[in-house]
Image (cartoon, rainbow, N blue to C red; front, side, top):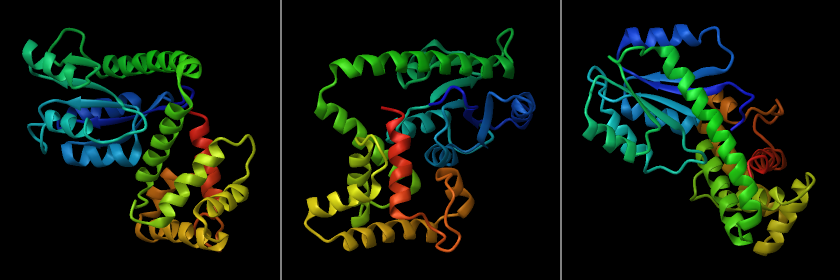
Length: 266
């Protein structure tokens, strides 16, 4: 999370007019942007995995769309994400039983659409306030973790974050190159300087295979993603300049990018 950048938000809403109001409201703002708008709970899950929004505005009913808000929440709670998005619900349902149930599912705030003062502005501004509070809390938690977190707990937290990043870009756990990438990124996260080549030699030594075999396995894993994925989607997930002659990231560049990204969050 970088509070100095626009907050990426996913809107899950089946009312066309409501969607228009949200889009019009954020059109000239620089502190938020929509990474997706959908009326489908299934499509919403795909958008969460591909875009990792920090905030989600969820219409609970989706009576004109596909699925329900409850189905989306159940799936969201079952998938592994590096950072769980802040979810606020908008609904025409007024039920304390339902409100208690969805709060237990991790909802941060509930807006009754017929309440006095309800507006798209209120929903967006509440998300921004929650984001700021979460950032402050995470900063405090990070300071506490530095004093109470054991080395093994820190190691597992870094590995989980690496796994989440590799899952997001779509590198299969069945590929040998995936394991080598995970190990190399972890080693580089703990280096003060960019020593991508050095950590790849270390991975080769740790696994008792030669350096060229490590490079080939990693190149194969990266190539499979660039061969099978939409290039514009890849640019969003991996916003780094790529050599036009190869068309894919070099192993050292790929490892360096993710090590730097993860290092900033731990």
